[in-house]
Image 1 (cartoon, rainbow, N blue to C red):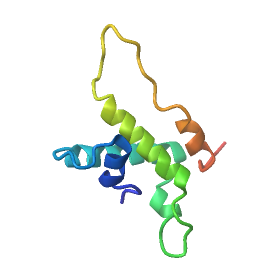
Image 2 (tube, rainbow, N blue to C red; image 1 turned 90 degrees about the horizontal axis):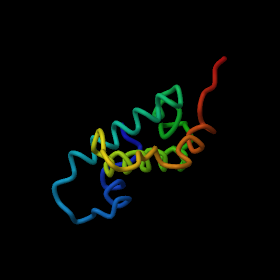
Image 3 (cartoon, rainbow, N blue to C red; image 1 turned 45 degrees about the horizontal axis):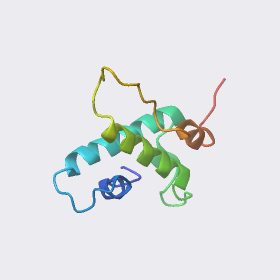
Length: 103
């Protein structure tokens, strides 16, 4: 289950009230959360937000929103004649403090 909704992403992007983006926004949220979970090394719902668990930390929600918004705005696979954008600044820092480190 996603820790943010497509409505949250809609607000993040300033698209509230603009019809036709619901499916794509939901796909971006699902993909971003999956990516964040791979960076973390665990599924967020296994650690947060359930019964007898701490709520989902806001930095993880923000990481999902930032990445989903970035992917929505950077939908082209390749852009010629322009500089290449990297994922949102600070995304790694938002995730790192919750990551399960193994050595």
